[in-house]
Length: 169
Image (cartoon, rainbow, N blue to C red; front, side):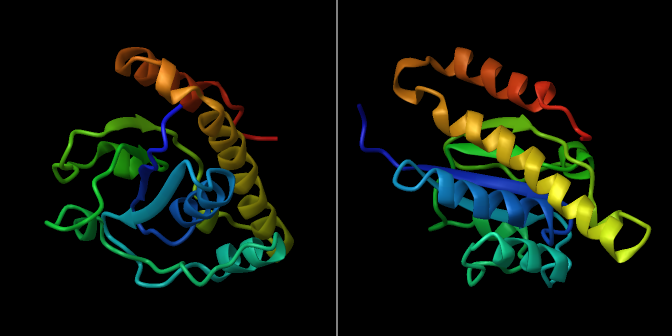
């Protein structure tokens, strides 16, 4: 077994909902094994209030949560990423910065809860559903035997995780 802590970056366009939620989940589920970060290609500058409300309601510390540009993690002296996951389709299609160390990447597209329409209850449900989808994927991810998988097999498994989790419940 290795004592390595793997750095993981979750990317989205606005860095106000999905990537923030994913960062919180992985930092809880992967304690000691993973350190999660999040960023956006065009950050909103603020975290969506429903994201904060959801996470607080699930007893997450939200003091980490801030909307930031992905360039912050491409600068010299930034943590070297082992994994980079896009969680929205826009970020997956954008030209990403070059990440030092050539981390493994995968696309885990999740509908944008911030774009949900309807009543306030329906909009809150969209955030809860996003949490459910990301929690399912991240739970599988943290259970992978990193040490015993070669890079190619691990990349294939990461892509499968992104494709095989139902998107709507």
